[in-house]
Each structure stands twice: as structure tokens, then as C-alpha cells.
Image 1 (spheres, rainbow, N blue to C red):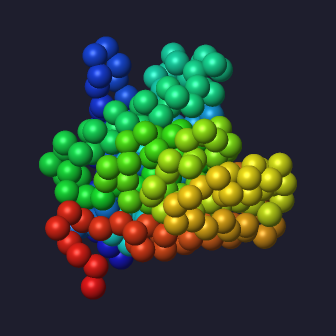
Image 2: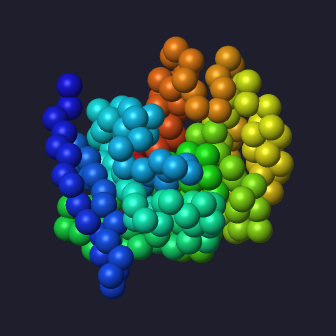
Length: 220
């Protein structure tokens, strides 16, 4: 089993303080920044499950509260995709400057509304963003940005999440980057059914391992 460590971190911008958990395996090949869905944050059990699965394969992870506790009570801010994308870009800058992660390629993992924020952020600042994965995502919330996304993008949707399937199919058509849409049979929106979240973690792991690399490290 790969050795890993988790560190509590803070990202500050003026008076804004965002709390996060940086998971570091030995000699990571890349770092995955998580964008949580509405009402969720760095302690999300589903995203922590995926993060720890990714760490086992040499990928660092950053689980971050994109909103402060006070902001999270404001439903307008919870669904403000532009604001959430702004916070992801703050975190991206932090990863690019921190000595533990600055040489790593960056991937986004977005869940639900967080996927819309991840895709908007990937379009607005594509540098070093090497892959995006969406779980049960709302890529339609970033519709005007989708044609500008350059990072290879994987959309994962539950087979019983019918409205979201249609949203992802429409978004898939707008993406012009390397892309793939996977529908997990028997899964609802939160992938609570036995074995379905494990499938998400495995699909995400393969996608990130395919596209992420360290600075100065070339593909074989």
C-alpha cells in the first residue's frame, strides 16, 4: 500500500480564508483539485473516498471548502458558478506556488454543481490543467465555456440519473477537447449504490493517470 500523508492547509486572499486537506502520496505524478457539489465541502465522504483511491496510485489531492461557513448558508452563493470557479482559480494558484505541488500537473474533479465550476475554471485558465473529471456533474452550468475547454474531459453519470444524463449528453456535444462520457449502470445521482462509487474512482484514476504528468517528465 502506498504511503500517504494528509495535511490541513489554508488558502488566504485578503480576509478570505478557505480550509483544505492536502493529500500527498510519495513522489506524486500530479495533483487533483476537488470541486464539491452544493452543500458539500472538504469533509465530503464521497469525495474523500475518491481522493484516497487516487492517492493509492500516486496522485496528490486537494479537498477544499470553496465557500466559508457563512457563505455556505447563502443559497445564491452555493449556486454561483462564477464565484466557485474564482475560488478554484485561487486554489490553482496556491498549488502552482506551494513547494510540494508546484511541479505537478493539475486535474479537476468536479461533483454536481462543482463540475460546472471546474469546467469554467479550466476554460478561463487552462495553463497546467491537464485533465477534468465530472461525477454526476452539471456541466450545463458552464455551457458558454464548454467550447473553450482544452483539457481532456471525462463525464461520469449514473444510469438512473436521467435528467443529468441528458444534461451531460448535451454538454458532451459542446466540448471540443479530448472527451469521453461514461454511464454507470444502476447508479443514481450520488452513486450510493454498492460498488458504483468504486467504479467512479477507477474511471477517474485511469483518466488522470493517462493525462497527468510532472513538470519535466516526458511520456514513455
